[in-house]
Amino acid sequence: MAKKTTPVNPPSPAAAQEQSTTIEGQQSEPDEQTSSLAGFQRNPAQDDAPKPETHPALIVQSNLQRRFRIGRQFGTAPVTITANSLARSEIEALLADPHLKVKAVG
Image 1 (cartoon, helix red, strand yellow):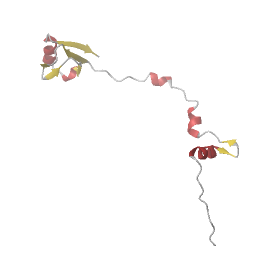
Image 2 (cartoon, helix red, strand yellow):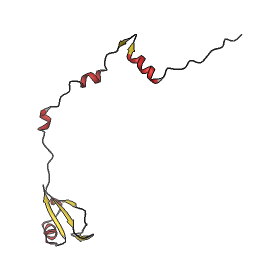
Image 3 (tube, one colour):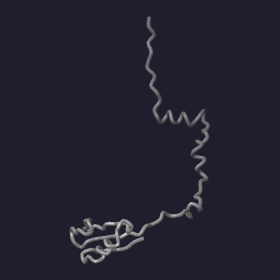
Image 4 (spheres, one colour):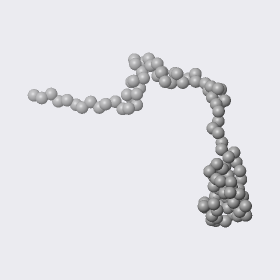
């Protein structure tokens, strides 16, 4: 006569986690990664690291919906252009346009 077997249900994930951290009522040691971060302090020398260089730029905004000048379109949203990408004559044209507000930054 064949022996009747009953399927064994695996433990729930919570029970499996509890079994992996506790052996016969003893707490397991904290994992290496957690214990090594416990005493981490910020290095003040990192705060003195050189900041990225800022390049001079122009922020251009029009009081009109669309304004074309120096081959570019400007509107009510500000547009930032690095100054070294413009020729002197282009900068002068932007500054001379009464419908554009030009602000130098950097």
